Image (cartoon, rainbow, N blue to C red; front, side, top):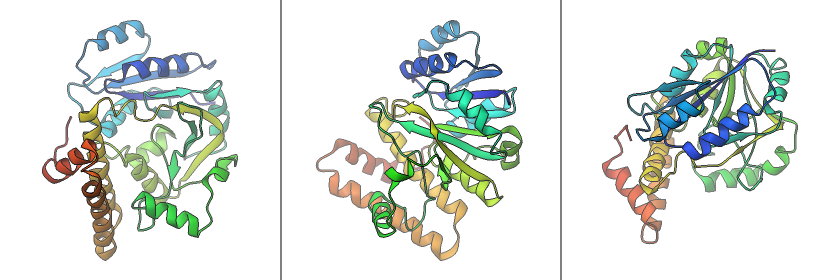
Amino acid sequence: MPGLSIIIVNYKSWSVLEKCIESISSQKINSNEIIIVDNNSSDNFIKEFKKKYSEYKWIVNDKNLGFSKACNIGAKAAKYDQYIFLNPDTELGENCLIQLKSNIVNYPSSIISISQLDSNGNITFPYGKFLSIKTFNGIIRLLFRFLKFENRSEDNKKPLLRPDWVSGSFLSIDKKSFNKLGGWDEDYWMYYEDMDLCKRAKNIGMEIILINSISCTHHHGKSSRIDLTTTVKTKTYLIRSGIIFIDKHYSGLSQKILKFLFISSRITEYVLLSPFSKLKRLLLYNLIFNFGVKEF
């Protein structure tokens, strides 16, 4: 069975990171390493954590380089041939890595993910269809699922899914395939990088696999929504990265139409809800005046 290099990108997510590391450490498995890439958290916790978890590999960036670039830095430092990219706000289920390793051999040269639960133990949907005319906002997605009689709850009962893309909060890929894809696209500072990686993988014939019989808990947003300011920035990047995805994977009239629908639906939402929500007001302001800012 392959050794596992587990790569975690951290930015001021210390409370959940500790639980994440402990959940990995409790796995009864040999031949694995933990690589923590800190995106310049610039606080007092980094020294404390490096001392407490000194057996793991720490890489501390001198500025916040974004998720994709930090992941690539972690991958370059990895010694094993199977990577797991893991969010700091995840906790692995019991025997998660043992089960994963036994399944990896069945799906060579694939991108593999697992089922995810939220903090209350409810099943979530860490996968989906590529951004398109049918998926550019939540209402449209629900409409097309209804018209096609899709039931995501029933999908989660299947032992295996082959979706378009899986979440980067838990994503495993072998080193050879990762290098063939050129790693994570660093044009994405945050969000849509997982969809992009899966899109490029599918374009060269790779499979995207989600194994429902293995699970982890994902405390959604605990690593990216630390406070209101951070929430506004991360949600702004969500829009910005969606546009990057459209520009990279569409062309001509379809690109123009999808980009218009994607942006206008967000603006409409923020305008309508801004009288009732400070967050929506700030998002609208950020979308208009700070859309090109790339760093925290």
